[in-house]
Length: 190
Image 1 (spheres, one colour):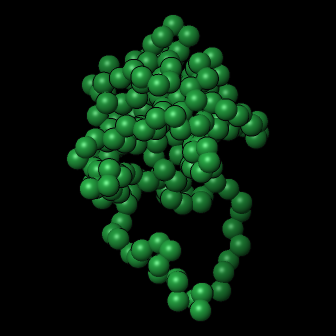
Image 2: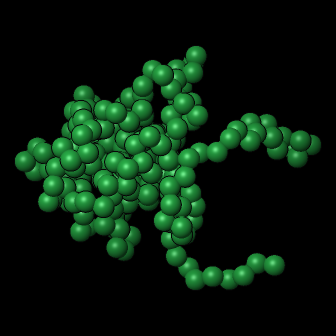
């Protein structure tokens, strides 16, 4: 039997993504978010939702671009820190010891040490309430060679990405392989 609970932001898991941007003075900044995902296949788009009060919000509005660096589990402390500190008050790259790298396709930095990066140009914004949703067309992807398969596609196990569980306020790794997509349920098609 199911029990009704209060509505809230407890869908799980959410991605642990680090959004890179340059401020008005060109200083690189990074912020960890959990409200985001792929939102379109053609053109390929990725969305992130930010509160207007964040320093990153103003930077993305000013520059029209952002990156999403996907941290591996070994960088959980840095990723958590990026979501707690404000780029307005501190240089998060200097404090964490990680490296901001200028994207060659959008006006935003990414985290060099993180194995997978999406480079996005803003094509839509949507005011939702407390958050603004930025829809970014993915115009570039960078991946460490060590996480790619023989076809040049990233392997989730090699990238070791983090997911966040809002109701628990905990990070988790991605679990074991369960089944092949578009094959596991094929027998139901008849």
